[in-house]
Amino acid sequence: MQGPIFTLASLFAVLLNVATYLLVGSLVWLGLHPPRSITYLTVVGVMYLMLASIAALCELLLT
Image (cartoon, rainbow, N blue to C red):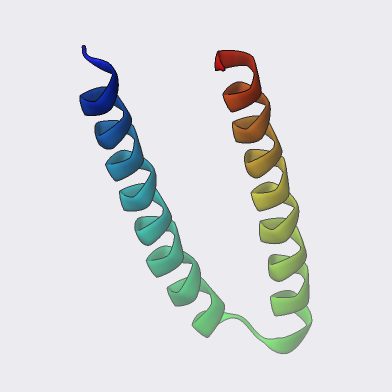
C-alpha cells in the first residue's frame, strides 16, 4: 500500500475503535454502582495509558 492511503486507513480504524470503546464503556459505566465505577475508571485509565504509550513507541520506531 502507498503511504498516505495506509496512514488514512490506519487513522480511520483507530478512530472507529475509539468510538466503539467509548460507546461500550459509557454503557458499562451507566450500569455500575459507585464503588465499582471508581475501579472501572482506574482500570480503563491504566489501559488507555498503556495503549497510548505502546502507540507512541511504535510511532517512534517506525519513523
